[in-house]
Structure formats: structure tokens, C-alpha cells
Image (tube, rainbow, N blue to C red; front, side):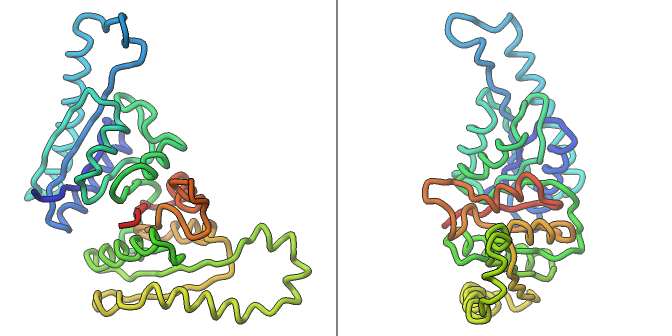
Length: 287
């Protein structure tokens, strides 16, 4: 069975934009596109309280119409694309998480209303990225189609998956890749500014430069067509990647970095990008 790209649809402009992006991604990878909508049953109707007569049929019909509209958009942009449609009684986030088990990627918009309710408002977008079993692309901001693919590199296991996806994306799109390794906590730096002024950071910078080199080792040989620029900066990773998102076509990050707490499913950097980036964000999980 071919692994699909799965896109969540809810009828909003953000959702249709996400489906359009997913269609392009599926075409680049020669994969089918599976468009899903989960409308769910409100909690008020559980137990002995039943929905009004005809309610379920009406919601099902509305959901199917939203999916058809999204698929039409996808097929108009990518006429040779193989598409699949699904309208489900399940709530949207559990549905997408289940579909992620057999997907190459989940693609969603940055905000959702209507049938999908508050699917991707605020922290719920991060929740989907945290629990999905495959990479999650959140389509937000401006795509900057000619901009580079930017990957945040930190040496973590999830970060290595991000590097792999970033090279794939850059190669498929014929774009340069910017590998960014920011290695300093700017907040702490302000507190200890006086001590920092007397500290020799050159050995630390050399060590962090080696981290970037070690992570990228072998990838440029595997993708010789990808032009790679390496950026090592003494700054907060979150801020540097948010800055890059204003000119990138895509930002790729791991779900949780090497400095994260073990119990956290999504790191502060990836969560900040999912909620505030100026371009689409792809969150990769450890393989």
C-alpha cells in the first residue's frame, strides 16, 4: 500500500490552503493525497441525550461536501494526482493522529473553524504535532516559494529526522538548504552579561560548529544537488528560526530538542514555530 500525504479539511481558507500545499507535496513525492474531515459528536449528545432527528445526517452531508470541495481544489492544481476522501464521525485530532500511523506526512492549516471547531487554534496545533506518528506540516504565514528550506539543527534524535526531511524537501523543490545551529540562551546571557564579556567563547563556538558538521556529515553526499549553507549563531534557536521564517519557503524542525525535558512531547522551539512562524513549518519526529 502506498503511503499517502494526509490533509485535514474544514472548509476554511486556511484549510484549503493547506490542502493545496499538500497536493503539491504529494505530486512532488508521487504519492496519493488523502483528504479527511472529522466532525465528531458534541459531548452534550453522549449518554441518554440523543442528537435531534436528522442532525447526524446533516453533519455527515456537510462534512462530505467540505471534503469534496477540498479535493476539487487539489485536483484542479494537480490534475494527475490520486486522491482519497474520508468523512468521519470521529473528532478531528484523534482521527488525524490515527491516520498519521500510515502516512508520510500530515498537513493542516494554522487555524480552524466550522466543522473542525478549534482544531488548530493556539496550543492544539502543537498538540497534533506532538502526538502524530509522522511529520506534521502546519501551513501558516507566507510560503516565499523561491526562499530556501531552513532546518534547525541541534544534534537531537528528532533533529536528525528534521535534517533528513529538509534535504528531501530541498532536493524535491530545487531550493538551497540553510542549516541553522543557534546555541545560546539569550535570556540567560542578559542576566550574566558582565561575566560573558570576560569569557572566551571561541572554544565553545568551535565545539558547536562541530555539532553542525557532524549532523550534516553524509547528507551532502547523499543529496549532491542541494546547495547547503551552514549558519552557526550565538543566539536563541527559537528567535533565529522565527527570523528565518520571514524569508524561507519552509522551516523544518525536530519535535523536541536536545535541551528539552524528557516528559515533553513538543519542545519550546517547535511549539513557537507552529504558533508564530512566518512560513509553513514541518515538525519531524524521531524515526
